[in-house]
Image 1: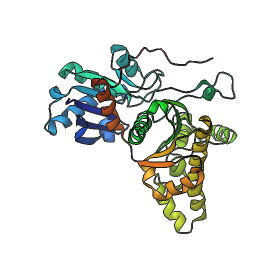
Image 2 (image 1 turned 180 degrees about the vertical axis):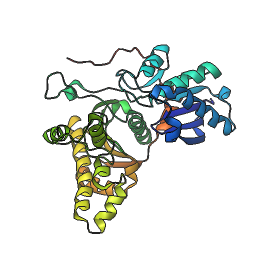
Image 3 (image 1 turned 90 degrees about the vertical axis):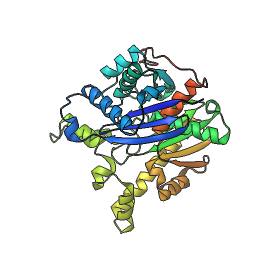
Image 4 (image 1 turned 135 degrees about the vertical axis):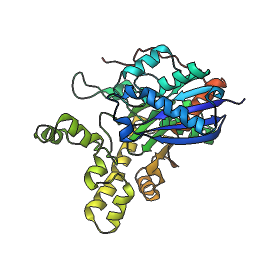
Length: 364
Protein backbone atom coordinates (compact mmCIF):
# COMPACT_ATOMS: atom_id res chain seq x y z
CA UNK A 1 0.00 0.00 0.00
CA UNK A 2 1.46 3.34 -1.08
CA UNK A 3 1.14 6.06 1.55
CA UNK A 4 2.54 9.52 0.87
CA UNK A 5 3.55 11.28 4.10
CA UNK A 6 4.90 14.79 4.59
CA UNK A 7 6.92 15.07 7.83
CA UNK A 8 7.24 18.54 9.39
CA UNK A 9 9.64 19.35 12.25
CA UNK A 10 9.98 23.07 13.15
CA UNK A 11 13.04 24.15 15.13
CA UNK A 12 14.29 27.49 16.44
CA UNK A 13 15.83 28.73 13.19
CA UNK A 14 14.76 26.11 10.66
CA UNK A 15 11.95 23.82 9.61
CA UNK A 16 12.97 20.31 8.58
CA UNK A 17 10.67 18.56 6.12
CA UNK A 18 10.69 15.28 4.22
CA UNK A 19 8.29 13.60 1.82
CA UNK A 20 7.95 9.82 1.96
CA UNK A 21 6.24 7.31 -0.29
CA UNK A 22 5.82 4.36 2.02
CA UNK A 23 9.27 3.81 3.52
CA UNK A 24 11.03 5.54 0.61
CA UNK A 25 12.19 9.11 1.15
CA UNK A 26 11.43 11.18 -1.94
CA UNK A 27 13.24 14.27 -0.63
CA UNK A 28 14.22 16.02 2.57
CA UNK A 29 15.22 19.62 3.17
CA UNK A 30 16.24 21.82 6.08
CA UNK A 31 14.54 25.17 5.49
CA UNK A 32 16.66 27.79 7.25
CA UNK A 33 15.02 30.94 8.62
CA UNK A 34 17.32 33.95 8.97
CA UNK A 35 17.13 36.33 11.96
CA UNK A 36 15.83 38.96 9.56
CA UNK A 37 12.95 36.70 8.49
CA UNK A 38 11.98 35.89 12.08
CA UNK A 39 12.46 39.37 13.55
CA UNK A 40 8.94 40.67 12.70
CA UNK A 41 7.33 37.95 14.85
CA UNK A 42 7.03 38.84 18.53
CA UNK A 43 5.80 35.38 19.56
CA UNK A 44 6.43 31.91 18.19
CA UNK A 45 2.73 31.52 17.38
CA UNK A 46 3.00 34.57 15.13
CA UNK A 47 5.29 32.54 12.84
CA UNK A 48 2.55 30.07 11.82
CA UNK A 49 1.61 31.58 8.45
CA UNK A 50 5.24 32.22 7.52
CA UNK A 51 6.35 28.67 8.35
CA UNK A 52 3.38 27.05 6.57
CA UNK A 53 3.92 29.10 3.42
CA UNK A 54 7.64 28.29 3.47
CA UNK A 55 6.85 24.56 3.56
CA UNK A 56 4.29 24.86 0.76
CA UNK A 57 6.77 26.71 -1.42
CA UNK A 58 9.51 24.13 -0.79
CA UNK A 59 7.31 21.17 -1.69
CA UNK A 60 6.13 22.86 -4.90
CA UNK A 61 9.69 23.82 -5.81
CA UNK A 62 10.64 20.15 -5.54
CA UNK A 63 7.97 19.28 -8.09
CA UNK A 64 5.43 17.64 -5.76
CA UNK A 65 1.78 18.45 -5.00
CA UNK A 66 0.39 18.65 -1.49
CA UNK A 67 -2.92 17.40 -2.90
CA UNK A 68 -1.21 14.01 -3.39
CA UNK A 69 -0.15 13.71 0.27
CA UNK A 70 -2.15 11.23 2.36
CA UNK A 71 -0.85 12.20 5.81
CA UNK A 72 0.79 15.30 7.25
CA UNK A 73 2.83 14.23 10.27
CA UNK A 74 4.32 16.77 12.68
CA UNK A 75 6.55 16.72 15.72
CA UNK A 76 3.97 18.28 18.01
CA UNK A 77 4.57 20.33 21.13
CA UNK A 78 2.87 22.76 23.47
CA UNK A 79 0.57 20.05 24.84
CA UNK A 80 -0.21 18.86 28.34
CA UNK A 81 1.60 15.67 29.46
CA UNK A 82 0.47 12.57 27.56
CA UNK A 83 1.54 8.99 26.89
CA UNK A 84 3.62 8.19 23.83
CA UNK A 85 2.12 7.32 20.47
CA UNK A 86 0.64 8.82 17.30
CA UNK A 87 -2.16 11.36 17.83
CA UNK A 88 -4.80 12.66 15.44
CA UNK A 89 -4.64 16.45 15.27
CA UNK A 90 -8.05 17.47 16.61
CA UNK A 91 -9.39 20.95 17.29
CA UNK A 92 -8.46 20.59 20.97
CA UNK A 93 -4.92 19.43 20.22
CA UNK A 94 -4.31 22.28 17.77
CA UNK A 95 -5.84 24.83 20.14
CA UNK A 96 -3.65 23.71 23.04
CA UNK A 97 -0.60 23.77 20.76
CA UNK A 98 -1.40 27.34 19.71
CA UNK A 99 -1.42 28.36 23.39
CA UNK A 100 1.81 26.54 24.22
CA UNK A 101 0.38 24.85 27.30
CA UNK A 102 3.79 23.73 28.56
CA UNK A 103 5.87 26.65 27.31
CA UNK A 104 6.71 28.23 23.99
CA UNK A 105 8.71 26.28 21.39
CA UNK A 106 8.57 26.24 17.56
CA UNK A 107 7.58 22.56 17.72
CA UNK A 108 4.08 23.70 18.72
CA UNK A 109 3.60 24.96 15.16
CA UNK A 110 3.92 21.47 13.65
CA UNK A 111 0.44 20.21 14.52
CA UNK A 112 -1.14 23.45 13.33
CA UNK A 113 0.72 23.37 10.02
CA UNK A 114 -0.32 19.76 9.47
CA UNK A 115 -3.95 20.48 10.34
CA UNK A 116 -3.99 23.45 7.97
CA UNK A 117 -2.62 21.34 5.12
CA UNK A 118 -5.04 18.46 5.78
CA UNK A 119 -8.01 20.85 5.68
CA UNK A 120 -6.73 22.65 2.57
CA UNK A 121 -5.48 19.71 0.52
CA UNK A 122 -7.22 16.66 2.02
CA UNK A 123 -5.67 13.85 4.02
CA UNK A 124 -5.06 13.35 7.74
CA UNK A 125 -2.93 15.20 10.28
CA UNK A 126 -0.95 13.50 13.05
CA UNK A 127 1.67 14.27 15.66
CA UNK A 128 4.05 11.51 16.77
CA UNK A 129 5.63 11.17 20.21
CA UNK A 130 5.66 14.93 20.88
CA UNK A 131 8.05 16.55 23.39
CA UNK A 132 5.21 16.43 25.93
CA UNK A 133 5.31 12.62 26.32
CA UNK A 134 5.32 11.67 30.02
CA UNK A 135 5.54 8.01 30.96
CA UNK A 136 7.48 8.44 34.21
CA UNK A 137 7.10 5.99 37.05
CA UNK A 138 5.73 7.88 40.05
CA UNK A 139 8.83 7.10 42.10
CA UNK A 140 10.97 9.00 39.59
CA UNK A 141 8.96 12.21 40.10
CA UNK A 142 9.86 12.67 43.76
CA UNK A 143 12.07 15.63 44.70
CA UNK A 144 13.32 17.04 47.98
CA UNK A 145 11.02 20.06 48.28
CA UNK A 146 7.28 19.97 48.94
CA UNK A 147 5.35 20.85 45.81
CA UNK A 148 8.35 20.39 43.52
CA UNK A 149 8.39 17.36 41.23
CA UNK A 150 10.70 16.04 38.56
CA UNK A 151 9.17 16.36 35.10
CA UNK A 152 9.51 14.41 31.87
CA UNK A 153 11.29 16.46 29.21
CA UNK A 154 13.04 14.04 26.85
CA UNK A 155 13.98 13.73 23.17
CA UNK A 156 10.89 11.51 22.97
CA UNK A 157 10.58 11.31 19.18
CA UNK A 158 14.10 10.08 18.48
CA UNK A 159 14.28 8.01 21.69
CA UNK A 160 11.18 6.03 20.74
CA UNK A 161 12.27 5.61 17.12
CA UNK A 162 15.69 4.30 18.13
CA UNK A 163 14.06 1.85 20.54
CA UNK A 164 11.71 0.56 17.84
CA UNK A 165 14.54 0.24 15.29
CA UNK A 166 16.76 -1.64 17.71
CA UNK A 167 13.98 -4.03 18.68
CA UNK A 168 12.98 -4.66 15.05
CA UNK A 169 16.58 -5.50 14.14
CA UNK A 170 16.87 -7.93 17.07
CA UNK A 171 13.48 -9.57 16.67
CA UNK A 172 12.25 -8.11 19.96
CA UNK A 173 9.03 -6.39 20.93
CA UNK A 174 9.56 -2.90 22.32
CA UNK A 175 6.85 -3.62 24.89
CA UNK A 176 8.95 -6.48 26.25
CA UNK A 177 12.43 -4.89 26.16
CA UNK A 178 14.40 -2.93 28.77
CA UNK A 179 16.74 -0.34 27.25
CA UNK A 180 18.92 2.58 28.32
CA UNK A 181 19.03 5.08 25.45
CA UNK A 182 21.46 8.01 25.42
CA UNK A 183 20.44 10.74 22.96
CA UNK A 184 23.69 12.67 22.56
CA UNK A 185 23.41 16.02 20.79
CA UNK A 186 23.37 19.70 21.69
CA UNK A 187 21.00 18.49 24.38
CA UNK A 188 21.37 15.10 26.03
CA UNK A 189 18.69 12.80 27.43
CA UNK A 190 19.64 9.52 29.08
CA UNK A 191 16.47 7.49 29.49
CA UNK A 192 15.29 4.20 30.97
CA UNK A 193 12.82 2.40 28.68
CA UNK A 194 10.96 -0.31 30.59
CA UNK A 195 8.71 -2.51 28.46
CA UNK A 196 7.64 0.28 26.13
CA UNK A 197 7.57 3.14 28.65
CA UNK A 198 10.16 5.85 29.34
CA UNK A 199 10.05 5.56 33.11
CA UNK A 200 12.91 7.92 34.06
CA UNK A 201 15.33 10.39 32.49
CA UNK A 202 17.13 13.64 33.10
CA UNK A 203 15.27 16.88 32.32
CA UNK A 204 16.55 18.56 29.14
CA UNK A 205 14.37 21.68 29.64
CA UNK A 206 14.38 22.48 33.36
CA UNK A 207 18.02 21.45 33.79
CA UNK A 208 19.46 18.19 35.02
CA UNK A 209 21.74 15.44 33.80
CA UNK A 210 25.24 15.44 32.33
CA UNK A 211 26.77 18.57 30.85
CA UNK A 212 26.11 18.92 27.13
CA UNK A 213 27.66 20.98 24.34
CA UNK A 214 25.24 23.82 25.20
CA UNK A 215 23.82 23.07 28.68
CA UNK A 216 25.41 23.13 32.11
CA UNK A 217 23.71 19.99 33.44
CA UNK A 218 23.82 19.20 37.16
CA UNK A 219 25.35 21.96 39.28
CA UNK A 220 25.62 22.57 43.04
CA UNK A 221 22.49 24.63 43.66
CA UNK A 222 24.19 26.90 46.21
CA UNK A 223 26.59 28.11 43.52
CA UNK A 224 23.71 28.69 41.12
CA UNK A 225 22.01 30.78 43.84
CA UNK A 226 25.24 32.77 44.24
CA UNK A 227 25.20 33.54 40.51
CA UNK A 228 21.50 34.42 40.61
CA UNK A 229 21.97 36.94 43.44
CA UNK A 230 25.32 38.31 42.28
CA UNK A 231 23.67 41.21 40.46
CA UNK A 232 25.49 40.26 37.26
CA UNK A 233 22.53 38.54 35.58
CA UNK A 234 18.87 38.98 34.90
CA UNK A 235 16.83 35.78 35.13
CA UNK A 236 16.78 35.59 31.33
CA UNK A 237 20.55 36.03 31.07
CA UNK A 238 21.35 33.39 33.66
CA UNK A 239 18.85 30.95 32.16
CA UNK A 240 20.54 31.40 28.79
CA UNK A 241 23.98 30.80 30.30
CA UNK A 242 22.82 27.62 32.00
CA UNK A 243 20.56 26.12 29.34
CA UNK A 244 21.56 27.60 25.98
CA UNK A 245 25.16 28.74 26.20
CA UNK A 246 26.37 26.44 28.98
CA UNK A 247 28.42 23.26 28.96
CA UNK A 248 31.22 23.15 26.40
CA UNK A 249 30.05 26.45 24.93
CA UNK A 250 30.52 28.27 28.24
CA UNK A 251 33.85 26.61 29.03
CA UNK A 252 35.57 26.68 25.63
CA UNK A 253 33.40 28.80 23.33
CA UNK A 254 32.58 25.79 21.13
CA UNK A 255 29.70 23.35 21.03
CA UNK A 256 31.77 20.74 19.20
CA UNK A 257 33.21 17.95 21.36
CA UNK A 258 35.80 17.28 18.66
CA UNK A 259 37.31 20.73 19.26
CA UNK A 260 37.70 19.93 22.96
CA UNK A 261 39.33 16.61 22.09
CA UNK A 262 41.84 18.39 19.84
CA UNK A 263 42.68 20.81 22.65
CA UNK A 264 43.20 17.88 25.00
CA UNK A 265 45.47 16.15 22.49
CA UNK A 266 47.51 19.35 22.13
CA UNK A 267 48.40 19.19 25.84
CA UNK A 268 45.68 21.37 27.39
CA UNK A 269 45.15 19.66 30.77
CA UNK A 270 41.86 21.41 31.52
CA UNK A 271 40.48 20.39 28.13
CA UNK A 272 41.57 16.81 28.82
CA UNK A 273 39.78 16.86 32.19
CA UNK A 274 36.59 18.29 30.68
CA UNK A 275 36.63 15.82 27.78
CA UNK A 276 37.00 12.86 30.13
CA UNK A 277 34.49 14.38 32.56
CA UNK A 278 31.98 14.78 29.74
CA UNK A 279 32.19 11.05 29.03
CA UNK A 280 32.17 10.17 32.73
CA UNK A 281 29.00 12.16 33.43
CA UNK A 282 27.13 10.47 30.59
CA UNK A 283 28.29 7.07 31.82
CA UNK A 284 27.07 7.87 35.35
CA UNK A 285 23.60 8.69 34.06
CA UNK A 286 23.52 5.53 31.95
CA UNK A 287 24.37 3.61 35.11
CA UNK A 288 21.63 5.42 37.03
CA UNK A 289 19.07 4.47 34.38
CA UNK A 290 20.25 0.86 34.63
CA UNK A 291 19.43 1.06 38.34
CA UNK A 292 15.96 2.37 37.42
CA UNK A 293 15.58 -0.86 35.45
CA UNK A 294 16.86 -2.89 38.44
CA UNK A 295 19.85 -3.98 36.38
CA UNK A 296 17.71 -5.86 33.84
CA UNK A 297 19.00 -4.12 30.72
CA UNK A 298 18.90 -5.63 27.21
CA UNK A 299 21.13 -2.92 25.72
CA UNK A 300 22.59 0.54 26.25
CA UNK A 301 22.12 2.47 22.99
CA UNK A 302 24.10 5.57 21.97
CA UNK A 303 22.45 7.82 19.39
CA UNK A 304 22.55 11.44 18.24
CA UNK A 305 25.36 13.38 16.62
CA UNK A 306 27.97 12.74 19.31
CA UNK A 307 27.55 8.99 18.75
CA UNK A 308 29.55 9.48 15.53
CA UNK A 309 32.58 10.08 17.81
CA UNK A 310 34.19 6.63 18.01
CA UNK A 311 36.56 7.61 20.82
CA UNK A 312 33.70 8.91 22.96
CA UNK A 313 31.65 5.75 22.39
CA UNK A 314 34.55 3.42 23.16
CA UNK A 315 35.43 5.22 26.37
CA UNK A 316 31.81 5.29 27.51
CA UNK A 317 31.60 1.57 26.74
CA UNK A 318 34.54 1.10 29.10
CA UNK A 319 32.44 2.46 31.95
CA UNK A 320 29.12 0.70 31.30
CA UNK A 321 29.86 -2.27 29.06
CA UNK A 322 29.67 -4.61 32.05
CA UNK A 323 25.99 -3.71 32.50
CA UNK A 324 24.81 -4.68 29.02
CA UNK A 325 25.78 -4.64 25.37
CA UNK A 326 26.53 -1.09 24.17
CA UNK A 327 25.04 -0.45 20.72
CA UNK A 328 25.94 2.62 18.64
CA UNK A 329 23.20 4.00 16.37
CA UNK A 330 24.52 7.47 15.45
CA UNK A 331 22.51 10.40 14.12
CA UNK A 332 18.90 11.33 14.65
CA UNK A 333 15.86 9.96 12.85
CA UNK A 334 13.14 12.44 13.70
CA UNK A 335 11.71 12.90 10.20
CA UNK A 336 11.80 9.15 9.64
CA UNK A 337 10.09 8.69 13.02
CA UNK A 338 7.28 11.06 12.04
CA UNK A 339 6.70 9.12 8.84
CA UNK A 340 6.95 5.74 10.55
CA UNK A 341 4.39 6.64 13.22
CA UNK A 342 1.92 7.87 10.62
CA UNK A 343 2.51 4.81 8.45
CA UNK A 344 1.87 2.39 11.32
CA UNK A 345 -1.52 3.99 11.94
CA UNK A 346 -2.57 4.07 8.28
CA UNK A 347 -1.56 0.42 7.84
CA UNK A 348 -3.45 -0.62 10.96
CA UNK A 349 -0.32 -1.65 12.87
CA UNK A 350 -0.95 0.91 15.62
CA UNK A 351 -4.10 2.51 16.96
CA UNK A 352 -4.26 6.27 16.64
CA UNK A 353 -4.62 8.14 19.93
CA UNK A 354 -6.95 11.06 20.69
CA UNK A 355 -5.64 13.92 22.82
CA UNK A 356 -7.87 14.53 25.85
CA UNK A 357 -6.20 17.60 27.29
CA UNK A 358 -6.12 15.86 30.67
CA UNK A 359 -2.52 15.55 31.96
CA UNK A 360 -1.43 11.97 32.59
CA UNK A 361 -0.05 13.19 35.92
CA UNK A 362 -0.41 16.46 37.83
CA UNK A 363 0.74 16.26 41.44
CA UNK A 364 0.15 14.51 44.74
